[in-house]
Length: 235
Image (cartoon, rainbow, N blue to C red; front, side, top):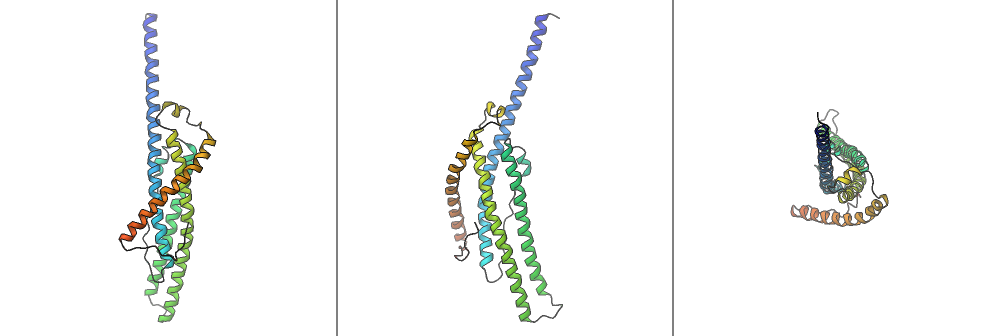
């Protein structure tokens, strides 16, 4: 085979390999960036939903009678976490996913336990009189309120954790636009710049959250649901 022909074939193969890997790098960067976009929206949704849950928990704590609360469960798609390229963000999302499941389990357990206590009081194996039933009912309600208080406190911490991750997601969304260099050198970023961003973006995020909470309150008011002034803050 002529050397020139052989060289041409070799160069063609090399160019083909380079083009292939460049395309793969671009696709990888696209997936990583899209994952950041997804989690920015998802974390905002979680904050809004958690705000609704905190409201319901406050009402449950301060209601003298029996209030049936139906909070929303909070979750994120763990399969999407693996699409994140930034290891620090990925680790925080994994930790957050575990805490969300703990939160959901706590709510399920507290509600199921209270409902079980109420159902047991409908039975009368021991021939309890009305006063004794009332005492047990009050005890069950107080236990439920204490559980809700603990869950509400945990929810406040959870909101803070969600905000922390969201701020980092927004930092890398700004940094990791679909550029090949940001894929190749993705591990390198200005840590001082990130810390400065966290301070500044937390302020921006706080204002955004206030607007969302205001809209949530307006939505509840349309259905005749108003905040209880005795509830205090769980955050």
